Image (cartoon, rainbow, N blue to C red):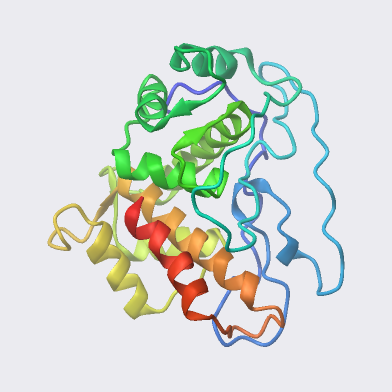
Length: 263
């Protein structure tokens, strides 16, 4: 598989497609398996407490940390520019990931900025626009400070490996693009069932030709899936009854949507 990432063991990441993808208006039920291999609080029945993350050591080729493929729950509507707390690499993090971060962190601050993250990812044949990089940083830190620490960097690293595998699985004609039908199947595999109207909007938005080619390249596929994932997670925070309906104040609505527009 392209991308040059250190290899992870079979079965790491998404697992089997959820049997009940999230559908607006569906009867109350758990939301199913969340992407990035994390146990979302919405995957447990209402009233059950989600299990606490317990880091697990791994080495080169070993199992990533339990949270290595996840970003933190996007809870609350505080300041989008809240300071990012310092972090450390999870125990047993692949040395290649550590070296990649340290090379990008040229000032030794313990954080890397958006352009530094863009450069670090490109060294592993993962070239992204600055907008996609900033959206990644927002979803993995829940802030717009445009900085990322070792723990979040590790999560980004493993997660993008999974995203590429998803993209390549559904790019069946190996064109380097996925069409509307392939995008629908990819989103379903991640647990999201969107209507044909929403699907057409996504293709029109994330097709670099403005919808003329009706195909989405890898960079824009990442941005598309992160947008659907992030907005759905924000919606689920308000849908406490698992009804497919939610009520937002004006302030909460603006703080939900705007970060995806200004990334």
